[in-house]
Image (tube, rainbow, N blue to C red; front, side):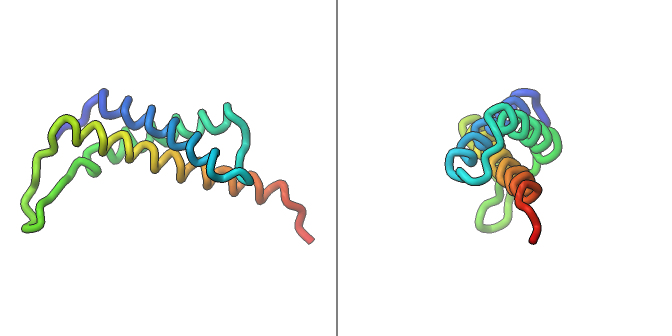
Length: 104
């Protein structure tokens, strides 16, 4: 496998979607639609740039490498972007909420 722009775009779009899905689930940690979008896009871009090839390493039960098909690549890259975007949105939301809460 080699690094491609298509896979980068898949992870960026996945990061955007994952951040908004996480914002829907984590009502207490929301920080605005623009903020979710920016965090999701940035997280998806970073994961697509740095870990794109790592997530496509698929091995069989015996440890030999398995070459993923195009549909497998599409799903793996999209889901990776969603997970990273959701985790980043949750982390940023928790940090921002922690700054709002007054200390006793």
